[in-house]
Length: 374
Ligand SMILES: [Zn+2]
Image 1: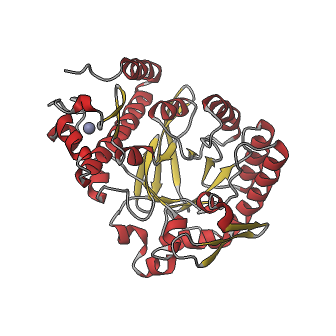
Image 2: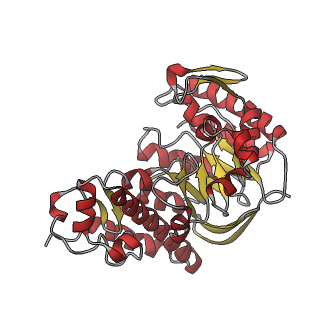
């Protein structure tokens, strides 16, 4: 029943694994591009697959409001609807609904909120969130939780975390077990080690198919994020996947893999691609910058993505300055491809037992900065 996770190899705390879902396998460590409204923005599903992406993330909040979960189910579920035959993880809607601020009202049973799309009133409870994710046909369903704000006092973080644990239990009871489908819980507790430990212990006792670390990358800073990760990870079972939500920049992903994280999602590569930013082996660069105007070289001569294979910096710069859609498409493609290059590199290094060497080379290259201007 449910999902299978094989731990294939370890290197220090880092793990090389494989998750097998109803819609195929995911090699871990894995990066999941965010497909908010049933699309990884500015990319066709075929293009997403060509980057080596094996799993994408869908957003319950956006999809329940438009086109609607029941409509999506009638149309064959999210895989069919967006023509992504591979695995899909859906978030629970919790993060987006909590960030609505004055448009939402939280109670111990769930959240009532006004749709930012058309002003209609909606309600999300742990049960309804699981039901929606079932209607979407998510391979991996996330528990509905209350996202602790930042900054936060320990008492408020404790209240929020304990509410999320009750909601996790309700979701656990609602989730329908099927072969190839799994339910992940989310460890909360902000940056307080005692709360993280309490949260992890409660969830592990309930038993889930995977464990996410939520409530990080919300403004606490790198040191607190990694120290929280360091205290949380040992609480999680070794035989289940671990997912660090919403992280992050390439260097953060590498550091988290080194600490034993298996899965990541972040809007960064796609969002950056729409704002002229490229992530490269030699750091970040902005293609809007005038220094690329006359540069016939690609973003990265070693990158195999279509933006780098077929186009110059000068052309990409021109597209961006002219506000041509193709500029956003090509940069998004490059960024997702580069993120997947990192994941391929990490997986290969863990397999070879040479992660330390790989990370040293990664950091040295990032530190060199972009190629000098012509
Ligand atoms: Zn490229």
